[in-house]
Length: 73
Image 1 (cartoon, rainbow, N blue to C red):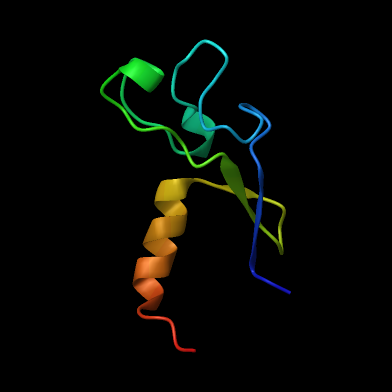
Image 2: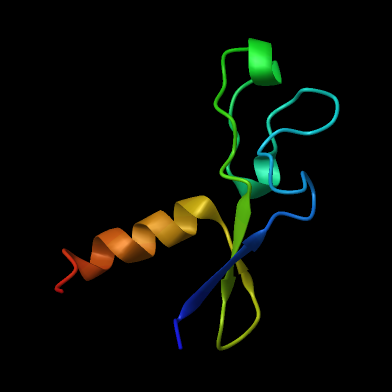
C-alpha cells in the first residue's frame, strides 16, 4: 500500500479548473484569471496521507519528496 493516495479533486471534478474558469487552488492552481489568466491549472487531484486520511497540500507533498531525495527503483 502506498503512503499517499491520489484522488480526484472534489472541488473541480478532476479538471484542475473551476466552473467559473478560475484555477482550482484545492489541487494546485495558482495565479489569477484561470484558463485565460496568468496562472497555472491545477492537477485535478488531491493528495491524501493514507495513514491518517489527512489532506496534504501540493507544496507539502513536494517538500516531503524533496527531503527524501532521489527515488531508488
